[in-house]
Length: 242
DNA sequence: GCGACAG
DNA sequence: ATCTTGTCGC
Image 1 (tube, rainbow, N blue to C red):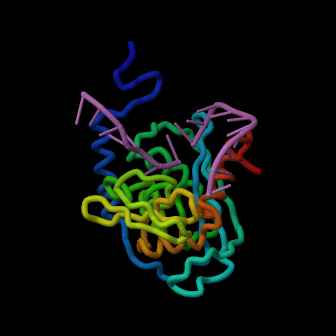
Image 2: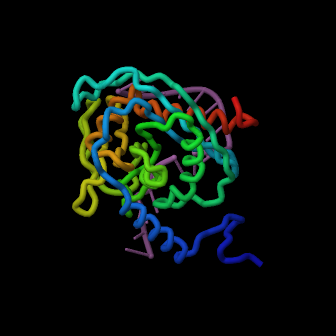
Image 3: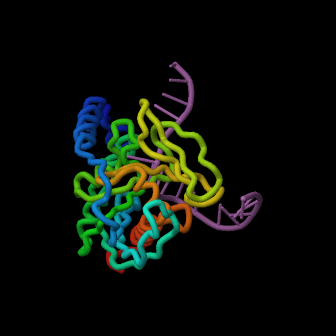
């Protein structure tokens, strides 16, 4: 006899359970603080998770900024030096449900970031921050629980609408939902799809946009680009160390 | 009822 | 995201 909550071996969530989780997201969203960074960040980290069957491997990579922005508005790429890497591994149980990604990815990602010896001044996460139906995407979820300045830099849009930004690097347009600017579509690389940038926690949208540009040589910002590469490699290899 | 839908 | 090679376009 198959329980209605188990379809093809995968646990499904009841509408009531999802409502409860949605309430939790709204509570977390109220804790998101949108204020300027206290100072130019020196240590900047990126975190990402990779799946290998049931195994979830998350990597946090911390970089040191080798030069500071020449001005507040400057968006040129700034050189970075990798200083540390941390890994975490967990068994994933929560299914992927659009709008509820954080319940699947946040636990391992948080564990990886906590494993860093050097606490970063800024964290970049591959996913939405406030650009979410309840203003609590993965980056905000992680940012609030870790209480770190965090940016959400997603490869595609989950919620809201935007006009296509101009073709040049640095061009951006606001992402709007419910009469509110919840993020921005940012051209990090000429003629490449824009990145969806939003406030995760303890940063302003304008700062988030500028930092994403300063951290991007290619379409994906270096911190998450490397976190993704390392997580993929770690998930592929048998053991946890490297 | 019909799409849309982070990773 | 994952299962997967080479290939076309900027």
